[in-house]
Structures are given as C-alpha cells and as structure tokens.
Length: 201
Length: 398
Ligand SMILES: [Zn+2]
Image 1: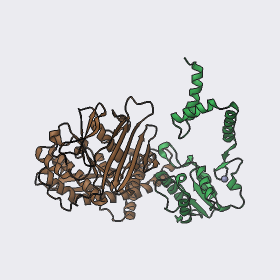
Image 2: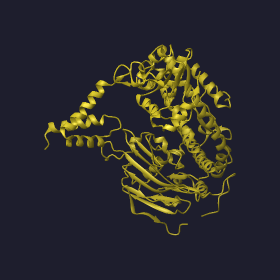
Image 3: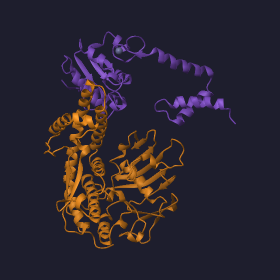
Image 4: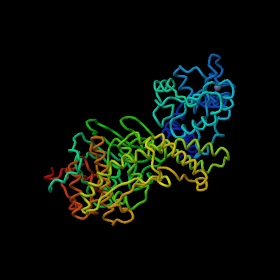
C-alpha cells in the first residue's frame, strides 16, 4: 500500500494544477508526474519564477496593464500619444494590439466586462480611473471590447458615461466576428477593425 | 409502395445534392459505448428490443446535429452512469453535405464541452447547429401543441439557425443579455442599477429586433407549406393557419426596419423597468413569443382534438423540412422515433408517402408492420451494441 502522506502530497499537487485554467484532471496528472521526475533545481527555478512573477508584476497605476513598477512599458514610453486611449478587457488584449505594431496611443485595461450574473458591476471594473483620465488631455477613446453581449453592454455603459465629456468615442469596426473575444482574432482582421473604427459620439 | 403522393404545391423535385451521415461513432452516450455505425444514405431502420438503445441511437444523431436532446433538458443525464469521473460522452459524425465531405464531433463534459466542426474547435455546443440539417419527429415533437410556448420557440429557433447561420449569434447575444438584465434587475447598487439596465437593454433591443423579424419572416414562409401538408395528412377539411404572438403587451403593429423595431423594444424595456424590478424578470421581448396555430381560425391549443394536434405537429415538422430543402437546396436528414404507432393507418400511409425517397432518414419503431414503406438498411441494436453486423441489407429493398 502507498503511504497516505505520499499520496496526499501528489494529490495536492494535482489538485493545484487542475485548478489552473484550461488544465483538465488528466493534463494535471501528466504535469505532476513530469514535476516528480524532473531535477529538483529545475522545479525550484519554476516555483521561483511563479512567485517572482506574481510578486513583481502589478497593475499599472495609470492604465491597469501589467507593470513591473508603478507604470507599464507602454505608459512609460515617451513616444506614445497620450491623447488616444484604447479600452480593452485584459492585459492579453494589450499584447495582441502591441504585436500588430500599428497603434501609437495608450491603453486602459478594465480587468473584464460587466456581468451582473457574476456580481460584476461598474465598481468592480477599472472604470473610475478611465473616467478621470478622460477629464483631461484625451481626444479619442477607442472601445476594443469583445463583441459578445457583455462586451457590448460594457461599451454601451462607457458611452453613456462619457457622452458629455470632450473625448471622441469610437469602437472597432464591425469586421470582427460577432460574439468573439479579441484574443482569438487574427492580426489582419484586428488591424482592419482598428483602421475602420466607427464614431459613437 | 403505393401510389406516389399528391404533389404539395411548390414542392421541388427531389434534389440530389444531399445531406447524409456516412459514419457515426459514440462513446458513453447513455447505454451506448464503442459504437461505430455506417448508415445508408437512404432509409435506415433501427430495430431491437425495447430499452436496448434504439431511441438513444436516434437521440445521439439529434444531439450531434441540433446541439440538444429532445428527451431531456439536462445534457449531463446523457452521460453513461458507469463512465469514469469527469469523462463525458462523445459523438462523432462523418457526413456528406452537398458534394463535400464533412466531419463534426462533440465531446461533452460537465466541466466544459468541446465541439469540432470541420477541424475548427469551439467550446459552444451551438456551433454544431446548421451543418447537418435535420428535422426530428419524436413523441416529444408530436406534443408540440400540447406543451408550453417554450417548446414552440425552440422549434422555431432551431429551424432559424438551420435556415440562416447568422441567427445563432443573435439568439446567443439575446439570451446572454436577457440573463444579465434579469440579474441587473436584482442588483442592489442603487444608482448603478439604472446604468446597468440601460447597458444591457441596448443589446437586448438590437438582438431582440433581429429575432422578431426573422421569426416573423420564416413563420410567414412556413404557413402555406404547413397548410398544404396538413391537408395532405390531416384527412379533415379544416384549414391550418399559423401566426406569431409577439412578447410585447398590447401586440402592437411591428415596425418594418430593424432600427425602428429596436427603438420600440428599447422604449418598452425602459417603461417596464419598475414592474420588472418588482418581479426580478424581464416582461418584454421575443423570449415571450409564441407560435400560434389555428384550424379554421380556432386555436389548435384550445380547441383541437388530440389527433388534430398531432397532425398539426406533423404538418409543422414537414413544413420545416420542406422549407430547409427549398432554402438550402438540400433535403434534411429525418429522424422518426416511434411516430408511426401513434398514427391511424390512413395518416400513417399518407405521412409515409411524404417522407420516403427524400433523402436520409433514421427510423425506430417497435412494430415493423407499422412502417408504410421499405427501408434500405437495418441497424440492429441489442444491449447497447450493434448486432451482429453493422448494418444488414434488407431483402428486396429498393
Ligand atoms: Zn500603463
């Protein structure tokens, strides 16, 4: 019989891994066996990387993107145009736009979309600081949220709140497949959507 | 076979670009496991003792094509009991659509399903819809006029998605926005609530207008077909007509354009906020629609006999199949589970004549004598397995 202690250590590891997104029970088991078979130094450097990244990466105080200090690399870049702000759901959307290399403005990362079902209202998103940012020096707010119901509702909410502000509001052109998340869209489609954005007011 | 059926007005010649399943594999689906069947492109009769998997086999075809079961609302009930933890069921079909080879599969798990259509992966069951065109005639379908409006809306919406691929996304966005607005109605955030409601109402109104206009258009197109089929199988002299009851109180005249209709819906949603917040439910919109049927202008639901209701349900399903065929140029796959026993001999004969020879069909019946036509292939099910060969040819079949 296996000793109960040993089993629970392995089970604990599998449980932790299976708790990660898009990792099922089977993959978690495979990863756990891989970890158990790997040299201890390798596992130590993996766990160090996890902790260092988690401790060292924080939301940018300006835009909410991942940052290693107060501000993220985009906000720190003096050549970016602070008059243009592109509103996205997640930091991964920022990477997708940056990969295109055509956008010269700044971002604002909401940290998700509205979803009353999940208890996520306006106060749970990084919205207040967006509205403050738009008080001064922003000419254009580009809404680049998903085209699913929650992305649309979040866009509608922002348009309502910014209606009286001076900034021009645009959203990505409807080249995007309906119901989609930005992270699954190919570069060309995304560039077309950015080039052909639509005025909302 | 008997004399050919009277042509239904506007009936196209049988077209021979076709939709048919060439191979179906199943794992852990109710009592079916490790099943690999190569059906005929014509009429397939599924035989075997009751409780050995005939209906389950048809249900699997239904699920693969239409992304839901007609027999249960809880998809997880379909997972075989003895399957390992967090495994689900798997259905995979190889088909011919028109002249193309087509593959779609579904790996259903409670923790999240995976759908593959033509090599493209998705996590949404609905993406299965609209490829393997299919119309089902199950005992549940025959109760279409007995049950609530929800079943009739689903009948319309599944048909819509098969007729017009853009309908799926509109329905999806509507359903999501509706659930979110209902949650927002119960939101305890004071001033925030109005903003949340307004945000979701914009999407509800826009998608709702899209649904209403599509439903109205297709109900209109289905009406003469359903009337002709009813005359064919009903045996009575009554005239069948269809209508759409819209989920807006006072049943106002609908504006013709999507933009005007969305504006109207948006206004109605705003007006209903106070009442809706009391009930915690959205009272306006196409989720309150119903498909209406009348025989000689009398409501079928209220006044028709059990037999008439069945005939009307059959006529609606036949009309759906014909509409699909006329619109896409492809006769859909038909599923016939236990329907012949439900019909009297006259109706059985007339109904059989309307479906035979129009493409692929899967038929399960407890009594073979009830079938008014010969079949091309027999799939014999015993204890959840196909016995003894995968399919045997029936003697003397066409
Ligand atoms: Zn930043």
